[in-house]
Amino acid sequence: MEGKYMTTEFSGDFSDQRLTFKLDNLGEVKYYKKQPTEVDDEAIFIIIKENLMAGLSYGSLEDWSEDSNFVEIDVPENIIASDFFYFLTKEFDQAGYELSVGYEMTISPESINVYSEYLEKILPLLSFFGVKMVKPKKVAMKPRHKYVKSLTDVPFSIDYKGSKATVYWVKRNEFLIKAGANLLETAPLTKAGVIGFAGKFGLRLREEHADQIKNNVLIQDVKLRSVNEVGTFLYFAGTNSWLQLKSPEGKTLHELTVVK
Image (cartoon, rainbow, N blue to C red; front, side, top):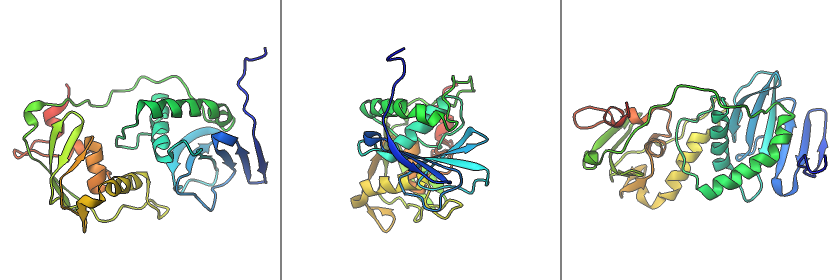
């Protein structure tokens, strides 16, 4: 029936190892039979094994087995690649895949609408390569934490991997890292020898507060939006930061605020 299917025009090229789909204002999608030798810093990769989606990667590729295939998404100019990657992890997580990046980003409702529309347009093409959006599975809920106003004046300390800081949870969506905090100097590398997504996000947070940092020490207080941003800013994530923030009595922020 006419109008039943959405059609997108494209141009492209192919070789015995790669298919390239140029989608005009939707960017490009490439399919690789083998792991590509060159990877763009802002490329999003979907890893396919046995015709099913096996993972996501941003700006780098881990050492996947030889029987893996790779779908590369080069987003258009109106899409922020790092934000869209995070959006994808959440979308696929809701669809039953376990792709949590271990920290939180805040994406505006307007951007979410743009990213949702973009994903809807390219998903028919991605489905040809094994990327399926299935109904959400019922999984155990992650711990939820509530803001407790009585903790506003409590100085929570962090001492992790050489990063030391005093942090206050001053508002529901505002954390204050006090001047004098020590930041982990170098972002960790992936197995491929490049900075991973958490490291890149942490470096971006530091760039936003560059005037408040000198020689990896805070010279002014910094305000961030979440516990996970605090951990990513200080030590590039890699752990549950709710367990790293400790009160003067030694209780973790998780213990004091988890919803039971």
